[in-house]
Length: 401
Image (cartoon, rainbow, N blue to C red; front, side, top):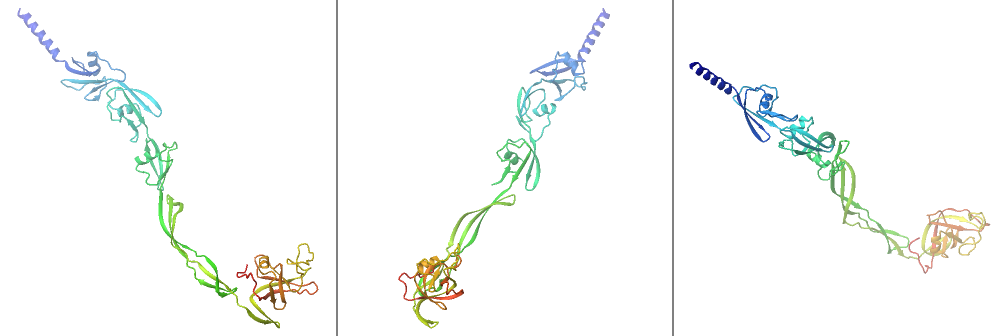
């Protein structure tokens, strides 16, 4: 009887010892807490004891760190294990849509484990540090390398911006004022990856400008006929111009005058020409006569067959109908109209009447052609003094044409 009692006591001690050698384990999985006691030392043994399994993308955590299934747990009085079940992570990027199975804690961890190379300039919505607590859709805008040519240097940046202007602003190279970029700031990032910043500068200046004065000729009753004198001196005027200049990267590309204000108008120079007629007497070559005008003219001579006609023919008539002979002279057309049939006295030639159109080369009005017959022709070339004889014509020409 005593022997049976000892055997029963030994069995109780043995059973108690076996029971107390098992370690309590809490497993958090699928929204529940599973409590078991086990003598297993590896996660695989513990999960088997709890009748729990891991999917290919699930992970087992001990003290917030992933632990391999075949690793020996450190000695402890109890254990708490967590099973993170894999969920769907939908990644939407410019290249399309990709589905990931992940049990990572955050978006960053999931992508790094999926071998994505991440850059600080990449854009994610939601952000990389967002916890993954269920199926999640992430919009991914990967950044690209850009080379910005600005202020004579090249700067390499990365950006996931949607426009050139946004990329430059994020890189601390904003477009200021009139600055421009190529491509333009509202365009998408260039495929080639190069952006040029054009520093635009505009300046507005006020500039003085001298205004030239004009010369006017006015009649003067105080001056004798064919005399000229200065009545009023000319003075230049002054204007203020508002000039706008634009430069690209220090090189001027445009300059315009926006406005001009005359602050002092110019004063014309006034030259007076004489209208006062004075009749004088002269005795030349033994001839005494009265005249109201005397002019130095270049003189040549002609006769009917020395008239210089285009076909070489002889010219016996004149514009006035008078014969070509001594005493008939020719002048340029405008002077013929002004002085036709006026009486003249020319030293060395004698009395004459303006009766024909002729004269010198174009532009030289101070010319007279002296008429001769072929029989008494005399070659003449030189300056002569021509007296316009009184009486004064009814239609007096005060300004020589």
